[in-house]
Length: 150
Image (cartoon, rainbow, N blue to C red):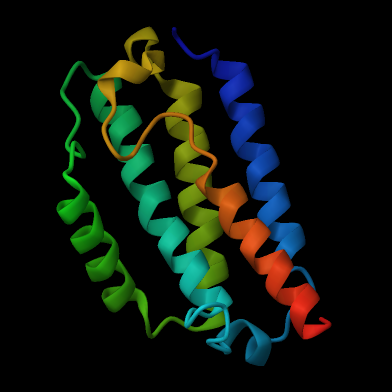
């Protein structure tokens, strides 16, 4: 079943707001601390930007009538995530926030400009059209904050 553009935009805005609320008020030191199962808040943001970039490109690609570039096996998905993690590991908190803001804007712009073809979820691979990925990471960050008393 095709997605509705306005509903999808609302979905991604809401997920983004949840994530921003989860990181609100964190110091650079807190964002850099690798105590969320070995990841820092920066690592979580960098990971999410990797997938926002992929998803925005997929929306544009599929909107243009082309096929997904992200139909991956489990092994390919793990390798892609690992490489993305390694390449983004040195980001500062300021860069992580900028990247998050920038890639989220690109995703929203791609959805806003998409053709009807882009709203058919069957065209997508791992960078699926609708995702709760951001919400999952926001939940992990909130749980970590609770555990840390932050």
